Image (cartoon, rainbow, N blue to C red; front, side, top):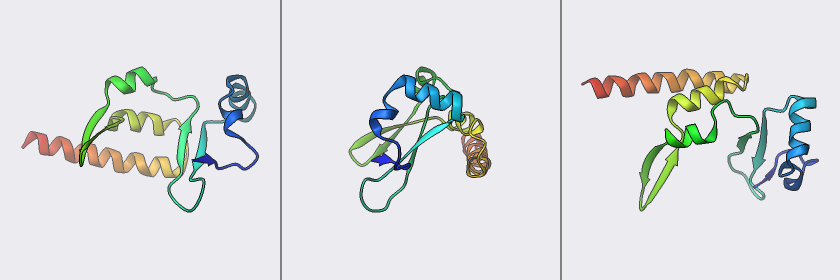
Length: 110
């Protein structure tokens, strides 16, 4: 993975004072990474998440994927994290996540 912005290096992103400056001066919310070569999904790294890592980790959901166990953020924490971004895609994702959560609740009640 590499930064989506070609003017930014991973070394800069790993420098806490630099990132604090981006948050303060540019109102940065996330840092986007893209595959180094070829096409594929990008990843947004939240620089100031609204759910502390320790809290999200304690509420993580585990999934089995073939012989692996995968940890994922809970639906409620993902909704909270996306709520702070203010992007249209996140608002759309939140609607979908709420419907998914409601459907899962209905299944548990049956």
